[in-house]
Amino acid sequence: MAFTERAESWRSKAHLSGARLPVLVGVTALAALVLVFAGKALLDAAASDALVVERAEQEGGPSVEGEEAVAEEARTVVVHVGGAVADPGVRELAEGSRVQDAVDASGGFAEGAASDALNLARVLSDGEQVVVPTLEEAAGAQGADAGAAGAGASSGSAAGGRVNINRATAAELDTLPGVGPSTAEKIVADREANGPFATTEDLKRVSGIGDKKYEELADLVCVG
Image 1 (tube, helix red, strand yellow):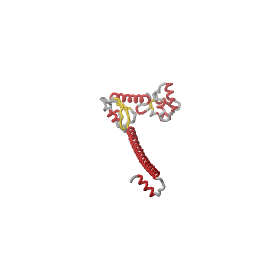
Image 2 (image 1 turned 120 degrees about the vertical axis):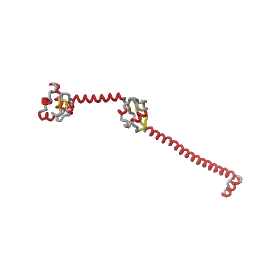
Image 3 (image 1 turned 135 degrees about the vertical axis):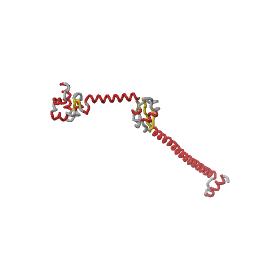
Image 4 (image 1 turned 90 degrees about the vertical axis):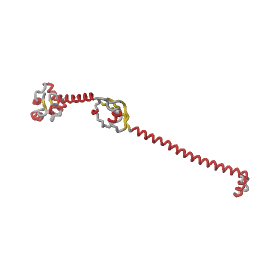
């Protein structure tokens, strides 16, 4: 059936016999165009929403992966390994790694390394330096420590833990029972003014130390 015949049929059914056929045809065509454009607009809108959702999902994906990558990178420590190792340098290790891991990452101990001088089980912290000494360096350090300990013993104390009243400092004398800072300073001043104490009993020449006080100190002090 032709379009004009359909329009004529619609005019009869709608009781629009009084309306001119060309006008009715134009109105019908306009309505059809409106429906077509409306349908196209709905389809475009739906497609646009789908595209927005798809883009949002795509943009969200890499962001999450990026955050995971940053978190993974944060779970590492960077340390400087030097001294008696095969390949000294800066090493990046997993968080929780120990000194032994840092040494292994640097090629292991070099010949002559004092491997027992370090606590190889200690957990590393970011930014620290691990220096492996040689056997010679470790021996020298132990000798220096022993010398310092000996010097301390000869200056203010003697065998048996007694305090040498001719060599002890005021701080060392202050550790004696009943000898406060003031009395300790008096002992040092007397020693400097009158010379070394010949016997421990000479302490009684210091103001503030009588027979009773001396009896408390007799077994704790010495001269030399």
